[in-house]
View 1 (cartoon, rainbow, N blue to C red):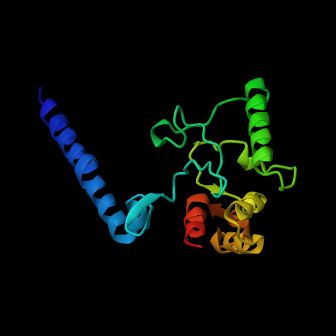
View 2 (spheres, helix red, strand yellow):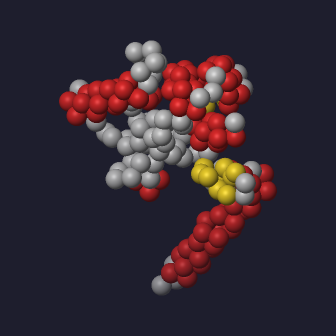
Amino acid sequence: MSQLRPAILLLLLLTVISGVVYPLLTTGLAQGLFPAQANGSLLEKQGVVRGSALIGQSFTQPGYFWGRPSASGDRPYNPLASGGSNLAASNPALDKAIAERVAALRAANPQAPTAVPVELVTASASGLDPDISPDAARWQAPRIAASRQIPLAQVEALIDQQTHRPLMPFLGNPTVNVLQLNLALSDL
């Protein structure tokens, strides 16, 4: 019984530290140092939130760039059901899904080269990836230019403007955020 009181006091102390003080401290630091990221990296256009720079969106119209396929449950890019398809490379269901995606992309992009970029037919590990490579964006550029009746060079210049490069080349690959690119495309 003499050990019960210190145990309860220690439980209360650690609960206050880890359940109140630490979350308030980290939230306060995040809001002070990185307010945009702490609030979800929301992208606004004319005062209306269009989405997050961290979560992909499903674009299917020919006049917009398309991102990676989503494997997040019943709705594409559902952050509550984040996860990959968990299909092995040897699984016939994965082969079938990729073949269907390749056929659909080739049908929608007949003027593009026949080799479809791999990220346009495979989901990321989270199923929510908002980025594609600049090559995948350029692969779609002829469809965008034809659909919007604008010069291909203008679409390619927009891709170059929206390409995010790593601080140092060995730290990662260049990427293009599909939502940001489509918002910039809408501004043309």
